[in-house]
Amino acid sequence: MIQSLGLADPERENALLIGIVEAISAGPELALLAAKVVPLITAATATDVCFLHVLDDSDRSLTLVGATPPFDREVGQIRLPLGEGVTGWAASHGRPVVIVDHKENDPRYRYFPQLRGQDYTSMVSAPMASSPGGLVGVLNVHTRARRDFTERDVRLLTSIGSLIAGAIHQARLHRRLAARERAHERFTEQVIAAQEAERRRLAADIHDGITQRLCSLRFHLNAAHDALSDASEFAAAQLVHARRLADLTFDEARAAINGLRPPVLDDLGLADSLASLARSIAEVHVIVDADECPLPEHVEIALYRIAQEALQNVVKHAQASIVCLRLHRVSDAVMLQVTDNGRGLAAGSLPLSSDRAGGEPTGGGYGMTSMTERAELIGGHLEVRSHPGRGTTVSARVPIP
Image (spheres, rainbow, N blue to C red):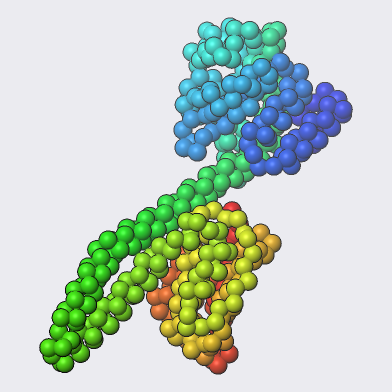
């Protein structure tokens, strides 16, 4: 057990074990773990200074992640390529290095003014490795006075390194995972922002181009109708028909503009935007039950689009008279539900969720696929429940960032 590691007495043994367990249990943050461990190492080995160097994500260089004061201010600032300096040599060769004195004469030694190597005489550099993760870094201890480190001292340092190497490996994995999650969230924001920018551009093009020409067309048709109303009954009838078509096209163009970029998304919260969306649906009665759920803008936009697509599907296909639109928080997620009392869907027309059949949504047409992709893009999940003659419920559950 730990007694065989060469600890001086049971009190020091217990202090080291308890301290390492507490440091590992404090959380997956590498900086916090290193800050808690370095004073334990100096206390257990009766040394003056301890430095922890950890492999970076490229596995080609070492970064100082922990140091006893006053050198803790250099954390993150000192980097060594693998194989360079005593620390890099110990890492690349997987063997400890002991220097009793005159370390500046060792060809492997590299001087860092920030670490004041001239103030310390003896040192040990011990690789830290774990069985699942392999080499994770190197721990160094230094003494001001000359000290003949024994094999027992080196075994102790190597054993301490093995004890904390697994925790450092897990901390590195956690850091990588957190970085990937942040990168995915940034990518999601950029994708949704690009989609909305394109929708905004299309809306502006329609407003500035098509609708303006439709207004001009309607004006000229009105003028022609006034001029020909008494001259030709047939021409007057055709102009009336043309005016109706122009009015219908103009209304459709305005609806397309609002669909591409509803102004409420810029001015209101998600709950009020959903209420405004419901009022714009004239074909069915929409009941809204929406709580205020503060969310990042790209998540609000995605949920709004899912609700918009679901309501359009109800109008086009459900033959429903009532729709209930709900938005509420459930534990650590937000749930959006659109439930109608329409004719329902056959089992074969339900889209597959992402955890079935290879994750490819099938059936239900482009609208279902679009809603599924939007939910998954923001880390959520779309579920559709329906029975013939008993309506349909579309549910989007999205974790709160």
